[in-house]
Length: 483
Image (cartoon, rainbow, N blue to C red):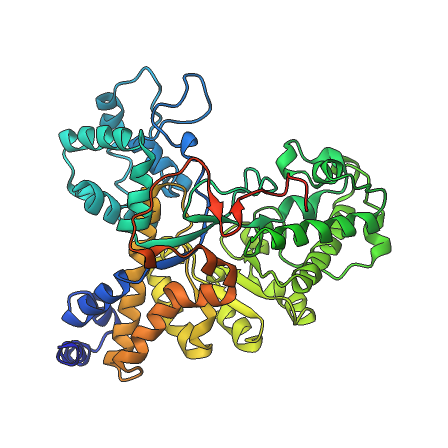
């Protein structure tokens, strides 16, 4: 059956001379539907999300709190749509009908953007709503259902683990990175190192769970010099390793350049112990660059990969090519280049091609940024790097966004693989293997600790728990006394 479907697709490809017509026809073929069905059945390993504790999402948030109740507007606000598209405010004293009367016109110029379209499969599949053609009555009912669903955490578990078929999710709890606990049974936290890189003195961090000096005080460490600080970093990363964290995470591209220079200790020491407001920009950068290089070395020492946000941030300094000197000088460190370096997906492929032994590319967020560029990237990456070097992640903060991003990723991979089979570049068997690698196997190989969190083989449905436990007991976190 599949071979016949591929022949149909090949006929369609040959019938039209323009590449766009080929792309448009792929999803209409039986070959695509078969490949998509195969990929849908793979329990995925999601390498990155930032889903907050359910109490921050639930609809009956405490009056006067900063936690916005989850409703239709909140769903749109917290899934990237509002980054560059308008979204009418919804004051507490405004009715839904009055808000929707204004908001329904906000989408007129966004219909083709992927930030808008990636959420549509979730609204269709989970709520039975065609958002593009939704009536006012359907909008009101959709809002009511969203509010109702977020009164029960079982909704989130059902969508993530059953409907999206995600078995394990890696979560960056950037709001409390050193707390190091998991909020959901299917989630495993990472150690976000942003605050470690920027902490030239204790006063730089307002929240204790972002403050390495708070950790030092809690564990009885004295940090009186830059050498002491590097020793503290070593202890924190070792503690993260001990407690089963799979990797480190760096999202500094939102605030500074990705060009981290190998700064001498003497220059970095000039900034140690001094608050940022007293430092010149070059002095602060010297400290950050020095610390980032030490973190790369410690990551290799403790065998923890580093996920690095590349592209689409502070774009004048987020090209992944800026990382090449640091990557080349640290061949024992495992680097994961997030988002495919969007829009520099070709450059990212070249980096992995040149440094295949210790660099991976993660397509996380890329299909949500631009579906077309994601397709191009998968096509190119599979031509320039081994297939065991590509991963994926949803990169969203609520169940519907995670479902939508997962669905778009599976569609994108299915299209690419079917087109390569139709072109004679892959056999069906090899294409399916690659699909499984990207969605599951590659992450388990790079982050072997995640294998201890696999559960779907038991055949049981995952339900919410009051505490999340790992293979060796409850997540203890970096705030606890080490053994």
